[in-house]
Length: 111
Length: 116
Image (cartoon, rainbow over the protein chains, first blue to last red):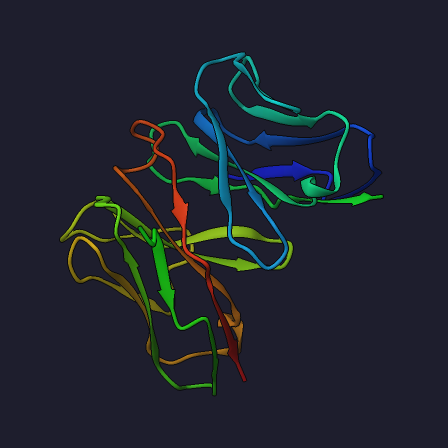
């Protein structure tokens, strides 16, 4: 079936280091969204990417959508303790209306 | 605006018991969704409702039923709970059906369910 894989599963970084999580789909996606979930909380929408090769920035966060629209990445520059949480990508396979969530990357930032 | 609300927050059931998880949104959204989240599995779509009066199966619908009671409310029912249904359940809503124009999903706080 359609799958969206995310790597790494876990990442521990020192505060101030950079962090990247990657999302890979087995099929072409019409769009992809990124969510952040704090421990014990619910997913919160961060951003949506629609166009091939699209790059969007939110302060220290940079999001990319691959040229083939099958992969995406989230890069955080100079992590802070407030960045702790699990980051999920969620993609819509072309021709469907359902988001398939990735397995998530749990980020821990050590002060 | 409360956004998306869910009740109950926590529930413990015995195998074979039934229960209904309630979800309501006050954002006048057309589409609503039920997900379950298991450790290391991400979120998986159980059922969704594109608009009032319609429901469709998601990725993991077996063992569940849903009712779109009105535009605001979307309930999830477990007729005969099983330990495999121990999970955190999230309800979400969006202005229109996801994927069609990439609407943002707004999630509720979740219901933590333990089936013994």
